[in-house]
Image 1: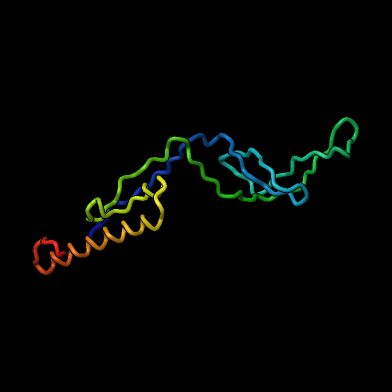
Image 2: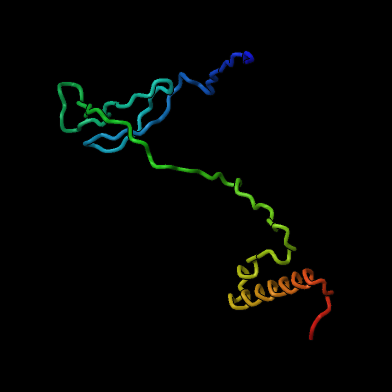
Length: 142
């Protein structure tokens, strides 16, 4: 049995761990709100910051102050302008003329004509494959 070297692990924190992050919380009375909380120690609950316009005690206004649990917000994704690019055409080993392109449809070609052209391309490809498998040449039958 060989002695394996001891493995060590290093924890790397990226970004400013002393900064704040916006988290959404849900007050049972006032609904969802966003609070800036410390990034390093995110609380599970915060007090609701909504102030009551109806209750004024002396010179100060009263805030709701109910404990509001953390509530994950909806999933949001962003696509920056200019980041969407057209990829290359995947041919999967087929000739480029066989790979489907719908540009003709976008230019106003009727769907029936488009389907007829696609059917002819695939029929020609099937004949070509069959001739290659049977060893026959490329002569055209009329």
